[in-house]
Image (cartoon, rainbow, N blue to C red):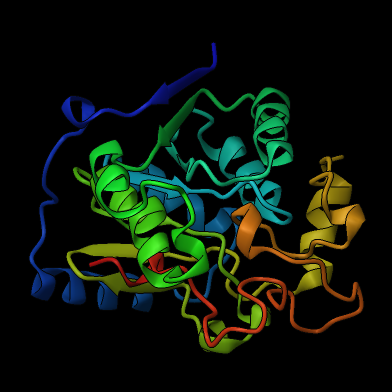
Length: 250
């Protein structure tokens, strides 16, 4: 049975179990033992051995998200999957999420939404994205994820080096303050992702066919040349901004 939960403050288990220093030591140890692995070979020991019951994953349910979701579903379909509903997403993203959850048999989707009190105070008309994208991302993504990650020691992300920018030197295991962040697809290229889609008959995000290579919130996502080497060129186009900030959470 699919469990799709809208997370409330009272649902959240507080606290991780490591200090920043302990997390750094743990990450170095894990990197020495598992740093040569990727994909399912890396996901399995992280979920079943190293962080059993203390690991989650985040997913945007964007254009490449199905790849990691498919691998995770083969390891543990009940692994908590955090989905940030910013209330500015494309309707196609919500429908695509439902399609993937059903096809992959994912049973533990945790939907996190912005704090309504904060939105009322700082973005009452819903137009903050037009004047302060950093603050808008904080209210709609960073702060909700900070709440969602409480109680977890590790989280899986779908980031990849071939996306470039700050992700160009991405390790497969790293620290994020008091947590360990695992990037099982860090070394994958575009062809590798396409292989996962093809071999598992995964559906593509419907907006990909319309020229969206990377999909986030509707106001800050544009179409790009399908042959572009910069997959994320359509995110905050024309601005000196390449990340929403969730990967800076400590």
